[in-house]
Amino acid sequence: MNVIITPHTLQGTVEAPSSKSIGHRDLICAALAEGESLVDNISLSQDIEATCDILRALGADITPVMSSHPGRAAYRVRGGLKKQDGPIAVSANESGSTLRFLIPVAIFSGNEVTFSGQGRLAKRPLTPYYELFDEKGVAYETTEGALPLTVSGTLQPGTYSLAGDVSSQFFTGLLMTLPLLDGDSVLRSTTPLESASYVDMTLDCLRQHGIVIEKEQDGFYRIPGNQHYRPGTYVVEGDYSQAAFWLSAGSLGRAICCTGLRSQSSQGDEVIVSLIRDMGGQVEGKTELTSSPSELAGRVIDVEDCPDLVPVLTVLASCAKGITRIIHAGRVRLKECDRLHAMATELNKIGGDIEEEAEGLIIHGVGGFTGGTVSGWNDHRIAMALAVASQRCSQPLRIEGAECVRKSYPEFWQDFQALGGMIQKEGEE
Image (cartoon, rainbow, N blue to C red):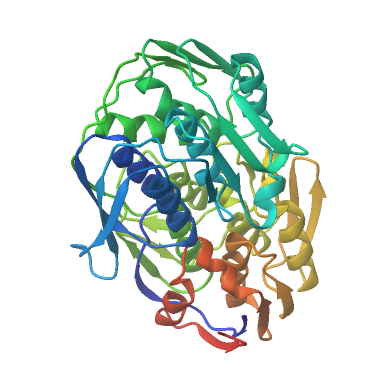
């Protein structure tokens, strides 16, 4: 599907989708608990569906039920993974979180599990796990270092050391699994841990589900064994990484109020509020945040702990005065696409002035864009960032591959129109 956007400022109120990051974690924790849980207020997406499908394959009973939140989903989860008859084949689709979180869970289940994936996921790095498996004697077979990946064997309590500069998702997968082992473990990073806030989010979620882990510092965790996940009712909070698009749009167009958010959240992407303010933007409120049109100024922005914000920050910086440098962003080249190259390429097509560096971007503020045809790069965050940029275009903006928002935010275009966005869809199924 392609969309043609007629430039028009957005305005109004929109509810943030629920946090995909927390949704993954709550569903996995519920599946690991013995007993019945309810996970409510889930915004459905392809990534969440992939996590549910794999947990079902591993033996959890996950059933859709009526949500107490209109327009959202809820799941009744009867936990407890089971040894299945014969090997299991599962697909993580394009979800890096699903894959990296569930590889250790699959090994713990005692099954032989083959993981496959779609798009760039098949090539995204898994080396930290491979090195651990070699050290710990966990059997695995890979396809030239990529997917499909087959794992089997057992995890033993002990010390687990791995690099923390590839992805925090490896730490989350182990933190979810190691407390279940018959003995205490230590998890430590051999490098400075990047995206440490995502690991803090994991620790917060585990605590709510009855799991206690001692964090000595970022990248060093003491994990008591023989723990048990606690069943219960869990309500997923709003997603700051998605709200970032609307808060940024409010800075560039007209006032937008984004509801459904938790103040002082464990989500690292809550920093979007302070980043917009640091650039001169106005964001008011706590759980209902209103972003108002502002004159923005360029800054140095360190995204080591909030890499998912890079696409929309690139749009904001292009519309600001002066020069912005985005630094410590090299890992976003390994996401659904090379996001540094994608944003530089697409915005430069329509009048942007962006230079790529190995670990970041130099963005010269241009105030606005010309319009024309751009690509979504099969990356949900690229397509949504370009949609925000359309407000500052002088001519219509045509985004190719706009259906990629289904990965995390299927209602994005619906919400975009509800805020006054003027779009024409081409080739929609």
